[in-house]
Amino acid sequence: MSVVPARCEGRLVSSEERSHCLLKELPGPLLGHVWPAERALLGLKVSRWMREELMLHAERVIYQSKGKEADADKDTVARDLSLSPGSASITVLMAGSKSFDFEFSESIADLHLLSLVEAIPMQLKNTLVHLELHGCTMSVAVAKQLSPALKQCKVLARLDILQSSIFAMAFDLILKALQECQPLSQLKLSGLRNLDGVSFRQFSTNLTHLDLSSSTMRAQGATELCSSLRNNTRLTNLHLNSNHIGSDGATALAQVLKTCTELKKLDLSACAISDEGMTALAATLEEHYALEHLDLSQNTAGGAGMMQLIPSVGRRCMALSHLDIGGNILSGSTAVQTAACLETCSSLSCLGMPGCELGDEGAEQLAVVVGRCGALERTILRENNISPIGCGHLSAALKRCKRLTHLDLGGNSVGPTGATALGEVLRDCPALTRLDLMTNGIGDDGLQSLARSMKLGTSRALTALDLRCNRISSVGVDALAVVVPGPLCPCLSYVDLRWNKFTKAVGVECGKPFRFH
Image 1 (tube, rainbow, N blue to C red):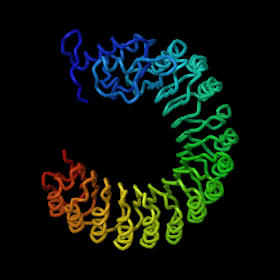
Image 2: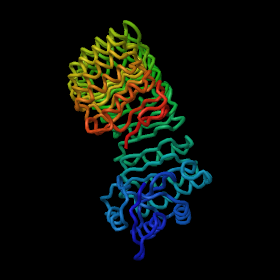
Image 3: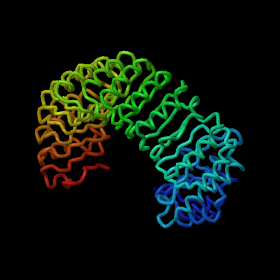
Image 4: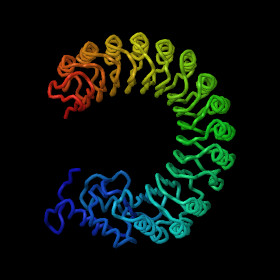
C-alpha cells in the first residue's frame, strides 16, 4: 500500500512515524479496531510498536470508520472519527492471538476482549450497533465479564462471531446477556462449533438475518433451531450451509418456513439433503413470493427431488433471481428433465448448475430456458459433458442475454467448433467481463476464432479469460497477442494460459498467468 507522506511537528515523516502521530493525536476515547498484522489500521500498516501501544493502553479504544481505510492525513481522519453521542453507527472488530501475532498467547486475545468490556459501559452502551468478534478465543471467565457489559447495549442490532473458538458455556452467557436487547435482529455465527442445543428462542421474534453456516449442526440441532424460530415472521436471510442437517433437518425447517413468508435468501448448500428433504422444501417454498436467492448446491438430491422443487419455486417465486443446484446427484434423463423444469424460472440473473451431467440433450433443454431469461448475468455450467453440439445450442441462446457478465463452461469438451460458437457470444454480449473455458480442448483453431471475435471491438468489457489446459501452442497465443493488450479489449488484464503446449511466446512463460499492466 502506498502511503502519502504526512507532516508531524512541521516535518515529513515515514509511514511508521505517521502511524505513531495518528495514534497519539486521535481525538477522544474512540472505538477499538484490532486486526491481524497484515491488515491495515486507519489505512496504515500495523507495526510492532502499535501492537505494544495497544497492549500498554488496553483501555484505550480506536474507532475505525467503516469504509475509511484509505490513506488520509490526520485532520481528515480526526474529522471522520468524531463521535456524536446517540447517533454514531459503530462497528467493533476484534481478532484473536493466532491471527494478530503468532508470538502472543491466548491470554492476549482475552486482554483485547477485556479492553472492550471496559469501553462499553463508559462510551458505547448507547451507540454500539454492530459487534464483530472475528477469530477470537473466548474463555468462560472472559464471557462472565463481557456479559454484564453487553446487557447495557440497548441499541445493538447485529452480532457477528466468526471463525472463533468459544466454549459452549461462554457462548450461552453471551446470548443470555443479549436477550433483553430488543433491536438485535442479525446474528452471524459462522464457523462456530457445537451449536446443537443452543437456544435462540429469546431472539426468535425479532431475527431478520441468521447465519449458522459451518457450525457442525446436525439434524437434531436443526430441529431445535426450528423450535426456537416457530413464531418468527420477520426472517429474511437464513444461512445453514455446510452443516449436516440431512433430510430430517430440512423437513423440520420446511415446517418453520411456512410462517417466514418474507424470506428472501436461503442457503442450504452442502447440507446432505436428499430427495425427501427437497420434496418437503418444495411444498413450503412455493408460498414464498419474495424469495430471491436459493442455494441448494452440493447436496445429495437426485432428479426426483429437483423435479418437485424447481417447478414449485419457478411458478410462484416471481422474484427468484439466484438459483444454484450444482453438485447434486443428477445424471442422464434426470438431468435433462431437471433442465426442462427450469422453464418456469424466467427472472433468473444467476444460474448455477456445475457438475450436473447435463450432456448435449440437457444443454439443449437449458438453452430454451436461457433464451427466456433476459436478465441473466451469470451462468455456471462447469463439468457437464457438453460437446460442440450442446455448446452451439447454448451459444445461440446466450447471444440474446445482453446483460451476461460471467460465463463458465470449464471442464466440458466444446472443442474448436464450440469456441467458434462462443465467439458469437463475445460479439453479441457487450457486458461480458469473464469467460472460463478451462479444459475444453479448443486448441489453436478455437483460440484464433475467439481472437477474431475480439477484433470486432465488442468485447471491450472483458477483463478475464481462462484458457488453461486447452492444447494451445504458440500459434494460438500469437493470434491472441494481436488483440491484447490493446484498444479493442482495453479492460482485459488477465489471461490464464497455464498447462498448454507452448513453452514461451510473446513474453509469456508456460505455468504463469498472462497478465497485462
